[in-house]
Image (cartoon, rainbow, N blue to C red):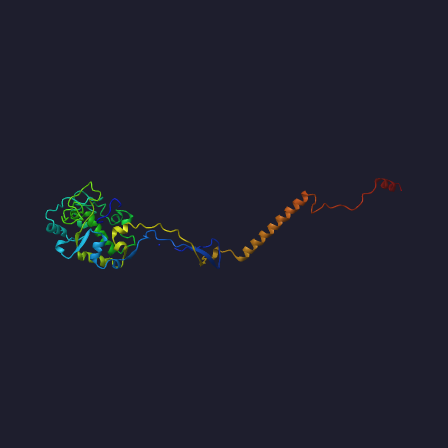
Length: 335
């Protein structure tokens, strides 16, 4: 993206019982509202049309001082084209006839030192295929969105519509692939005016304020800026500092809060197949048998402890008949 700071660079749950039932169970169910991990929770997000009143504001505010909107289309650049001939070539010849387009004058992370043709597969940024300052790896929509870190994603306020996102891809291709944009480097750029105190004609590597990647006041066709706003009218974007991309990048998302359980009453119907159900009579029989076994066990335990204590519950049976006296038996036999 133009002028990036390189050094810095959506359920309720229901519970089904594991046992069979033919009735409706009304159960308290904890419902958790899970936060969307992709949402930037501390950003102020608004519709594009609530941030920018027109396309000029979008181009001139979103990227800081990188671009200015111009009605003079013969002296303004476009970020996208479909012709075989790059219309920006003519614009540069008119504005900067001595400008050198044989070098990629932006020294960003992903720029090649010199523009060169790209081969098969260079589809995302195809207008620059014949003379590109970026490689096929860089010319990828997904990569362009994350190339400079999480804070510089264009969809931090939520997914953009395809039409809107396409303009961000086009701007990314323009910045990374176009050899023309290097002429407008803030420090050491060919286009810097001598009377402009906000840019320097010469880059000073010993000055910590200087860099080789920042773009300054490159003229962009106003109709392109207007088309961008039309495409993104109902999409959401960060509104911090009037929709300034770099101010928004400083607003890192806060950590997602721990979800708080909210208890609700949810009616859950058990849909178990009838053939898998156990009849009420069988269940009752099992319960009765279980109770009987329990009491029998208690009784046997009591018998055991009484026997050990010498107080048996069941004493041995005794014969009440008296044994005959042997002497008396002998006398009876003499008689």
